[in-house]
Length: 404
Ligand SMILES: *Cc1c(COP(=O)(O)O)cnc(C)c1O
Image 1 (cartoon, rainbow, N blue to C red):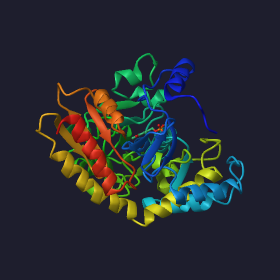
Image 2 (cartoon, rainbow, N blue to C red):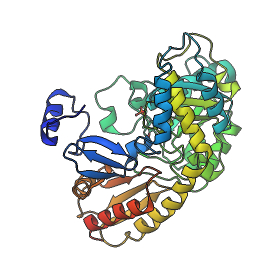
Image 3 (spheres, helix red, strand yellow):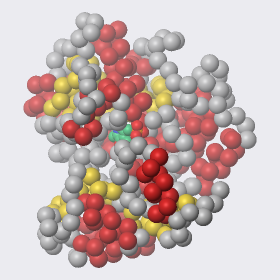
Image 4 (spheres, rainbow, N blue to C red):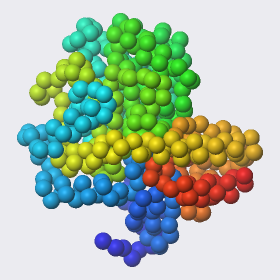
């Protein structure tokens, strides 16, 4: 369907009839392909955000669109009341990609995190032997795990939490990257430690070297599940299938989402061992849409694409280039610090050089789309299919905006 309204007309209409829980950049996209989006006036923009890693394979990746179209002509939804012929392969392949045994499919990231929390508690009571109602989950400050009432109960972001109480108990928050604090927080009631191996929303914060390995040691010693929320860091973004791999760490459970749906449909999952996901009995958890045929068909293609290693390789090589170029801006005045791994970077703008929002708007004027976070930081995470030429052009625009 084409529209003849202008961008500003559509923005005004959206503002009048949608809740203002977002503050999007004033661009109205109508089509997209690969790393590029086109707005309703025909202006083109390089997508350097990639839907917070939901678009790791780019917009409308041909393999994923073909898989979706083929499934649209067969069957799209059955509910879990019946089996369907894409489900077994999806679970087998995803478990294998993760080096795990069992999959519990959901739709959005937040639902998968909720599932991880419920699984850890149930495992704690049924397997570990924690007294009923006493289970504790240790999380990190500055986390982002989603928007449900329980998940924001253990957020440290006041904007995300304010006016949503009463909050779900059973969580202890420790500073991210602090091994001693983690060691002190884990006790006999602790059923899980839930962490992002790299904190995306916090500004692409990479923990100190050895941190994840120390968390793995502590959790293994204390019979506590190590849950890695790889919803944003996983599936190629950092140059590996999972960000945990950079530290040689294998958690007890992966929480996946975003790129698992190939930018086509929401697909999320918890992936773990028989000993952990085996705690469920029929009726104890579920989702009408979780593991639907369309989701499974698209995710199966995502898994097949990840198996080639091509996207991890691109993230490694282009990511090294990205970080070399961004690193050269540090100390030049406008950039205070750069963090990240692979095709993923948080860039802190120095005071006096504009807020993250202002830099994002200036980049938009030059045809590059990024997202600010926490005031002074911009997040760069282009689709892994971006060409080196396009990445360099995007970096040229950043340098022009920052006066580097
Ligand atoms: C995006 C994100 C989530 C939440 O995913 P939704 O699909 O938006 O619910 C959870 N954890 C991390 C690390 C994320 O980046």
